[in-house]
Length: 267
Length: 274
Image (cartoon, rainbow over all chains, first blue to last red; front, side, top):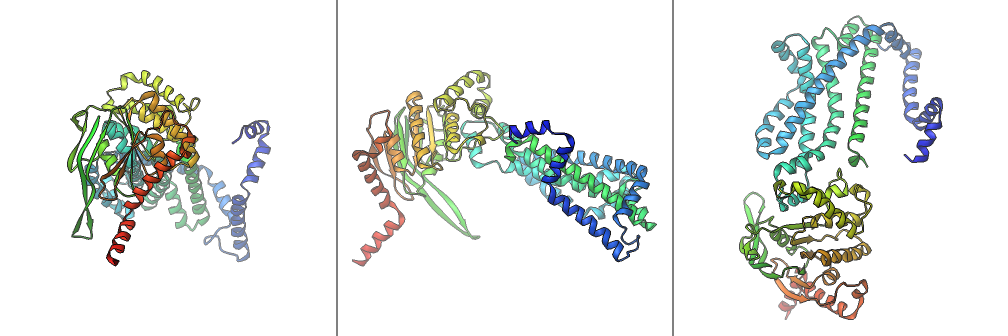
């Protein structure tokens, strides 16, 4: 952004800034509004029963009428998502650094890790329920299992793709392998790691909802489960829209973090 | 002094499951490079120039023959080597100055770290010499290709190595920038006088910069000619268009063209016709 542009922005009022950003994003806004409009018209014109497809206004009403419930359960789901995601990030980066440091460790560990990742997680949840019980630990382990893999793989990829020329250069100046790892490898891996966060956070939400709809007693997934049992499709769709918006917000947060933390990778 | 004696190198390639072929890359190379000299190695493309470069840098081990530095084998020789290649591989998250300081930070297993302050002074002086004063705190991606290559040269020289190895350092640059950097490199050499071995396929570059040009044959490469270059220093860009220079370039080009595999085959075909 140019200096003149920033100075202009400071002079602007909040309203004109809002108008400007609407102008700049006119196409996506039009598409979203169009989508909602078509949805509303279709439900009216074809007189679709609410339990099949509630109109957007019905969904909004359901959200408003159940706002306290939805707020509490969204917080619950987001809490488990963030804790599970935190575990996935910590362990994913740790394992990624480990297998990226040494080809021997990579060769030794990767078959097991890849196999664990290849297990369909949906089918694993009942077993986790036997092992860990019907409590939040099972949610967290599910979220972790669904989302750690991309973090680990991206960390590894960042380290494994150090240019041959860089390795040669370090060798010629008699630098240690540890220095190559810390000074060339890890900074290089950071954009890869941050990119994986965007994938992992989306998967973490999937994992959380999965666990909640299978056995949960709380959370957005549980709301969807009990609402659909009563044919309260409007509430179920409302709950899903809220969690989807949370996902979008987290995705946007990590995109912004990426650009802030490694400007060299997004020039 | 660097002495290369009867150096040969080959590697095994796998073709399919069972077939293995030995590819001879270098055959019986003999060179003597004096201390503080500036020599170029030139040859047809794919002849093994880069392999020779990697051997001198200690990145590959000779199969037969040896490379001696001041009478000692390369591995035992305590000899600092500076390295710059076509890809400047500057780290994008470090500033130009810190890219250069990376070398004393990690070189010799961190053994030079305590003198980082001194090296910072040297790095700044080097950057000034190549005309990059005021770019210390910029990042490599804010620079043009030619400027990145200037930083690369500074980084190669920061430890004041006695041997500077250059593998096509200007290969990716346009002709104008290239000529500019010849002058920069010569300035660096005159100021710090490291021994320089420049591997290139640019004939004018080799003649313009060095005191001696070694011409390699096609694969397996061996030295087919040594051309002494005796122009006075510092050399000026106009030198390139003097008759003596052009004549030397023509001579070297002819020697290399003769070495091209298709030229050889052509000659063989002509023979078989007779």
